[in-house]
Length: 471
Image (cartoon, rainbow, N blue to C red; front, side, top):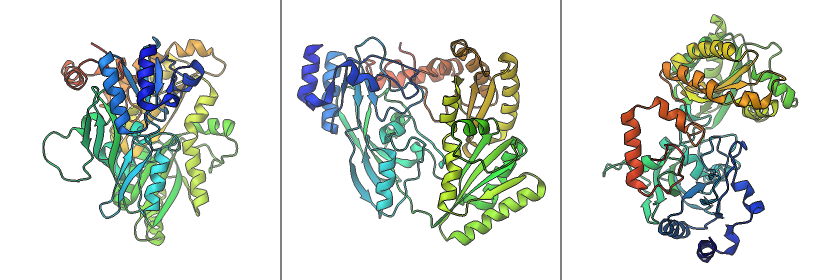
């Protein structure tokens, strides 16, 4: 071990190889504190060349590597195991914006750049990078790519897979693939970047990316509406798409079970409706012509919906401050649920047309299996991504409820698959959903995934135990 640590320090500098338990503590656990591992060392390279050197050394020594960015993941995908032999490769020092090409609407950015820093750099160049997440101040581009992050603007701009033109990747044996081609058309063989996006560091180490930029809208309007049912929300989504077209940027749903959680843990955030309706929709419109046109279109959609009863109440933000207040309600739901006690999270996706039926059936099944449990769901209805979370009954034993996670997961995920959905939408499989995923994939699909893993990481040293089970 000492010899390995000395070799690592020679590659990246003494200060960037951590071995003391206190120094490694933050790197050894995930954001939710659900998984606790023990790394052999935490290595923080400062360049692609240093990443390549570390990977070559680890490959020669047969040491497994766990790539890590801002460590904000929710599925344990960047946490080492408990045996004290794996290296955590933290990429936060790769934090440079290499190049912005405004004429081509592209940016080349290193993996350790935070999402917020990327957004700010794009804004400084008069452009927009549209990915938006609650953790954008600390999550990194590399982590966003590794999990194929989505966020609130997928409806208009797509997830990270659709925002990426090229990658730079270090292979498990320390070679560097420079695929940083900022081209929108490149049909010269297999699209290799797609293998690495969403692979959670299990095939190689993403060190940089060429990403799309966009012209920023001249006006953005935010509205929150109260609705009688999820069926009405789907109807409103259909109508909004027809009326607004690509101007419809976000379409979020919030169930009424989330409202008391926000009031209890974030009383400074004001819910805009006096009556606790079954659900609310948070809608955002972006317009490249000006506010007048955007407001007219939004008011037309809301007027039509209220005329037919699809919407029963609504508010339109009259300022940037009011818009931020509405979005703050949406962004604090997950934290409010965590503060309220033990809960079992589900990050699922479904065809929008199936969401209402799924929720109706799943809520009944949860109520039968866990009387008193609360189901608080919210998410991105525009792209079918729902966070269907089950909270423990008030006053129940936290440990006993946590032990029921496999049972509750099976119940919910069986329903997801029955409605042609996916058990992981934007948080990745990591450790949390790896075995669940294997239950629902066909033997052929699992075999194809194993073949890709074997081809790109034949020694099985890249983030073992994540995404797919080791052979």
